[in-house]
Image (cartoon, rainbow, N blue to C red):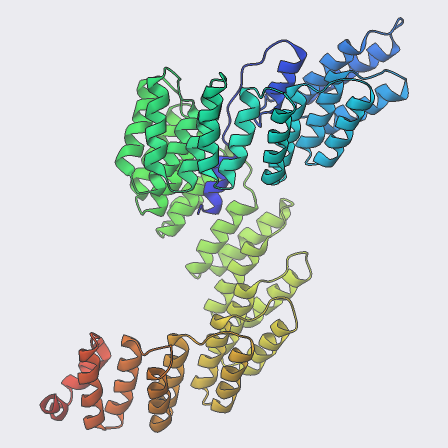
Length: 568
């Protein structure tokens, strides 16, 4: 449902949960995907303090070590926590349930929930009883690994064991259900929370609103948004971001704009994500001036654009052919110290290629490599397209070989682009060779690839190859499209094989792939060129009867011949 940019935006959303000073509440806060930032100096300071405790005599209790581990978790230093925990064990410091729960949380954040369950077994072995926070960490770990069904099973199991889920437990499972589109169950859990006396908080509601928006139920999300406000629960910037994105995606610009203005009126500072969502969607809808206004407003508000924000406006300018403005923003971005990533370089290379500005695109590729950035599939495909479009297929082929020498394997689009480039420039045998190479790899030709090659063979009059390709299409369990037949009809008629072209046309009428407006016009062109006016008139009447209309070429050819006008 979302574009690659939109996903990057929503994944970069952030919020915070209030942390309670007790050890378990500290861990609970850390289960949320939202964390505080840290510097390397702070990490080193905590690690240094940890080693001082190890050397202290008498050695402090495990509680003091646990506090330091909690600090490192808040800094996202999960691997460091695991390493220090092993160090504790090596000097016979017995962990308590709090330490084990922190360790479980770290494994889950590193998507090694299996190790987390091993630590759970250790908790029981040591004679401790896991707390609800311990189970919440495991549920979150399962959700992070996409094992939502297992997470729900664990949730049900701990409830059956007599554990009372807290708001964080419910929120984690609700968020997981929303991510897989199981909104009905998620909303049911929301009601169950209230029945159990566990009031949902703004993070829980935000998860539901985000899920509803992602699955195109924006009206329901907006209703829930108004409901939580009526309960006195203040939606966060993250809540607004989800709803604004959903409204933009549903083309409800007025509502999205109103919501954005309401944020400003309430002195709620929109995040870079808020602004970028608006800029990205406005660009995609062709409202580049409005997108530019929002981007400028972001800077005026004091919100510094990040690499995602810059990529949205640069892509927008490229989409509307304003490459000079795209390059200007690109230069400003670099000057401000925001280093462009592979995605931004690929966007610029793509739009330069579409404008046939190949030298500029190649210069960007060189600059990209000099910065230590490795081109991806999109980068290579864009340049291959540009070179082929500029009738430089051999240069494109050299780039293709460079691509194959990396870890990036060409996809069907890249292969098809190159096949098209060689066909357009008359190198049909090279095109065929690439086509055969595809069939020997995991990248199988699709109907578009076949159509490209069939068209090339038709233009060259190689109809024996066309017949073989058509047979190969069926062997590969692909269905020819109406476009496939139109290519063949046009090729045959232009090469003087009008009877065979008409036979293909009639075969279409007897198949599941019926002639379309283009099929009729192509066939009529053939008869008019061969002065078979009676047949052309018959097809024109038949075409009109089926609700199709003549294209410009047909109109011109008819206008040039008074005799056919009388027949009509």
